[in-house]
Structure formats: structure tokens, C-alpha cells
Amino acid sequence: MFTKYRINNNENLNPFFIIGSGRSGNTLLRRILVSGDEVFIPPETYILGEIFYKFKKYNNMPWDDLVKFIYAQFEYHPEFYTFELDSLNKLVKKMEIIEENKRTLANLINEFYYFYAKKHNIKGKQWGDKTPYNTFYLFEIKKVFPNAKFIHIIRNGLDVVYSYVNAGLYKNYDEASIRWIDSIKLAKKFGKNYPESYLEIYYEELVKSPEKVLKEVCDFLNLTFDKKMIYENKIAKNLGDTDKLEHHKNIFNPITTNSIGKGVKNINIEKLKHKQKLLKTLDLLGYKI
Image 1 (cartoon, rainbow, N blue to C red):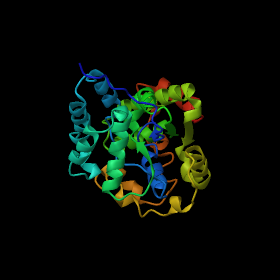
Image 2 (image 1 turned 90 degrees about the vertical axis):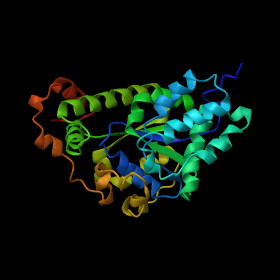
Image 3 (image 1 turned 135 degrees about the horizontal axis):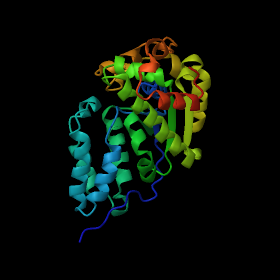
């Protein structure tokens, strides 16, 4: 009979996660934070929630098979090319023989992030993740990383919906509306349960007063604030996915308030199927339409 492996073994791991709906300034915040030397944030992963359940389901595999299975979820994901890693073979071999007390899901994920950093000669000592899809698995991620911190970046829902459709990520405003509403609801619920691990910031404040907001974020993450992180944009082309995916193209531009209000101006809210839910959520967040 094979050992049943733990989700974590009280490892002293403290990653952070940028969460919330997509098209909310998530990539902008990522660009700013990695412009310092203290943290690194790889391209979006998409699979952490699914890995949580697969690890639990196939927990009775021999450890070496489980290692191969978990890392295959990364390596065979369609977006894996954005990590610019040829193979995870060396990581697999390392983790197959890791000490028994370190045979946890937390360590498997943690080692993947540091493997990425080492391959790209990244100096940051702490890793973060910027995958909006993780918002649907926050409680699961918290179980894997009890010391993790979560930054929820919020943007006016109408601007988000307009941006989603304009970027070709959703076919229509109604589908995009539901994604935004659900993301806000789930992140807020998580924040109520774990207020000490949760910080809310607003996109509009980030682009209007970037130094003020970044100081708050740095304090929350115990990072050193440096305003150069805001205004130097040399790192954007080295983020893996920003130069490959069309919907990240604006990350190369200076911080601007130009995108505020585009959805309000261009969307006829009366024609939306989910008008009432959208208005209720906007009001909850303090947006007046």
C-alpha cells in the first residue's frame, strides 16, 4: 500500500496571488511588482485549482508517478509555451527523490515556480501568481498555502466587460458580465473568511495614484517600496506571455487613466440580460452609474 501524501506539511511558504476578474489591471500590477528585485511572477498557470483535486484523487499513486502526473498538468497545458521552458524533466528527477517529509503538493508547486526562476536567472526570492482564473479556487489554494496573501484588484464592471469583449476574450457583454460578477462575489467571500490574508485595491486608484496604492501593496507583502517600479517599464518584454498574447499589448504603455469609463460610454446597460445583478455589484463596490 502506498503512502497518502499531504497537501502541505506546514512548510514555511508565503507566496502571494493577484486575484479578481481579468481585464482589471492584474497584468499592470504584475509588471510593477516584478520591476523590483524582491519578487517574481511567472505567466498565468490556469491549473492550480484542478491540480488540487487531482492530487487528492490520485494520492495513492507511488510518489514518482504522482510527480510525473502533476508536472504533466503544467507541461501539457496549451499555454505552457509562455513559460519558455523546454522541459520539466530535471525538475521531475529532483522531486522524485525528495525527502519523504517534503512530499507534498505545496512543495511540488513551490519547486515549479523556483525552477522557472532559476531557468530565467530571475533574482526575486518570493514568488507570486497572477492568474484571474485562480479566483474560482481561492479556498483550495489557501489550504495548500496557509501563509499566502491575496491581492484583489477591482475595476468598474462595465469597463471590464467592455475590455473583455474588445480583446476578443468573450463573445458578448452578457457572458463577460457574469464572469465579472462571479469573480467579485467569490473574492469578496474569501476576503470575509480570511481578512488578514486579503487586500483590496481599485484599478482606478492604481492608475490615478500609483505611488499611494503601491505603498499599500508593498506594506501588505512586506516589500520595499521604490517608485522606480512604477515608472520603469523595461521588464515588460521579459514576462513570457505579454509579448505573445494580443490582449496584454497595453502593458508596454505608460500608466494612464485613458481606459477609465470606456465601458460606461459604450455599453447600453439597459440591453444587458444581467442588468440588475451588474448594477447591484457595482453599487456594492461604490461605483455610481
